[in-house]
Image 1: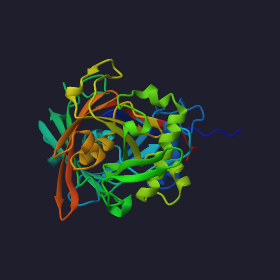
Image 2 (image 1 turned 60 degrees about the vertical axis):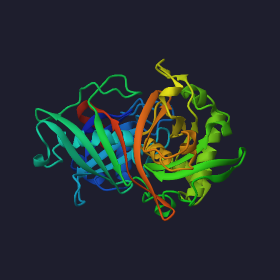
Image 3 (image 1 turned 90 degrees about the vertical axis):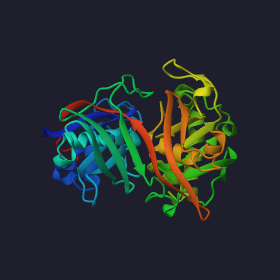
Image 4 (image 1 turned 45 degrees about the horizontal axis):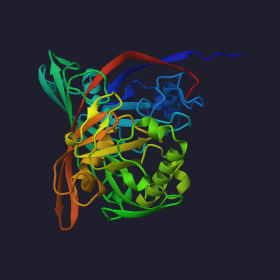
Length: 396
């Protein structure tokens, strides 16, 4: 039998926010994978260890969760006034596809650091000490992200005392600005609210008519009140992920919401678009014990949010969903705004399974139309390993 040796591809394994992923420079990929298509997808699937019918990704770099089955490709930017082009691929765990339909807000925190360390940023734009401002073009959705990366003695500063619920150890704070986060290229023809409504009635078979807020900001997201689907908003992962019937109901809501938002043309397309839209349920503040055992008091938060990613309840909160939460909270009358008590606000602190998170958004109403100039939040990032990743030479 002919054996094909493994090949080596330069790569860096990084944590960004509450996610982990394998980062590549576009120029380091094999030639056939430097362009979008089947070869690139096959390569990334093999790197991560998918599709895995066992659901473990043992033979790859993935961690068998939506937060750890991720890939990033960066290149010097082709866009004026930008430093780096950032392409994100959410790799399915058990199916043979890579979802390119949205961004990863958590890994966005690592993009600036990786770009600086990898020589993708003009050295004249990077101070030896202070804050480096990295202008990122998010290629999946056609949006700009500004990362403020701390520098010390000419190196990216990764250690520090910034704590992020859902991440075990403190690190250096990376501030992110998501500019014009609404009206993505995908979803609803570019509208923040694809149906034109802040709240819609969504008829979901087997569940009934639900009040939902469907928004395109950060990532397409469907918000529903927790009590409307039998929850309190204080649930942790096991309460949802250990209930196959509940997961099936959420997937039904997601599929019908995606159809209503114009993200898919037929319901059966939802199965091949796992990354977007997200489904989240919201509730008014209440005390609970987080997954780490920390007590979260009702007075510490403005509302409760639980969100699903790739068919499972997320252990903390997706960064892009946090942008959607902050944006919706700033717009009077959405379910998120109402759960937070209603009224105008430019920031919100919400409780998630791992603790709390604050996100800000600048929203304005003009001529009956809401717009958001930017959403702001802090994350952290750290290189976990760097060198080469190996894959069989015939894998793509």
